[in-house]
Amino acid sequence: MKPDTQTSAERQHVADLIDDISTAMLTTVEPDGSLASRPMAPLEMDENGAIWFYTDLRSAKVEQLRAANLAFVDASDGTYVSLSGRGEIVTDRAHIERLWTAFAKPWFPEGPDSPNLGLIKFVPDAADYWDAPDSTMVRAFGVVASALAGKPIAMGEHGTHTGLSQT
Image (cartoon, rainbow, N blue to C red; front, top):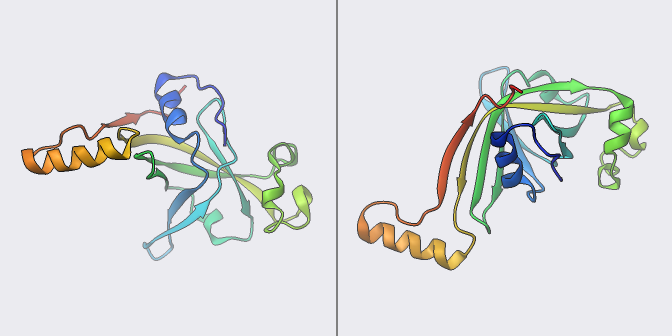
């Protein structure tokens, strides 16, 4: 996924953090109140911060998007992003075709014209992020130094962005 240039600094920061992460875990609330997570491949982050995914319109998750969470992890770079928000189902064929990738063909063998193919538009409201130093050695040193000092040292940046769905 390559994010579009964002219209706010906060959304641009989120886009930069998740730019090279190819899989996100989408968590929704089941009818019984339990949480369900599943891996999803992000297709696009549009200029308004919405993140787009293909979905099978027969999937139970399409009814569970009122409140949702996306988790992006790049453990090798020490980057962790948790987005809370909501999802919407979009069936616009032009948008589906524009985002079509051959990697979706195993799930949708009829291609972008599959009658069960739709899009999830995930609209984030808030992001929590942890961005550690790129070097594994520096992160390891930070863990050891933190343990010895009894407080976090050189552990990277943690923060929150709110109001992401606003322009």
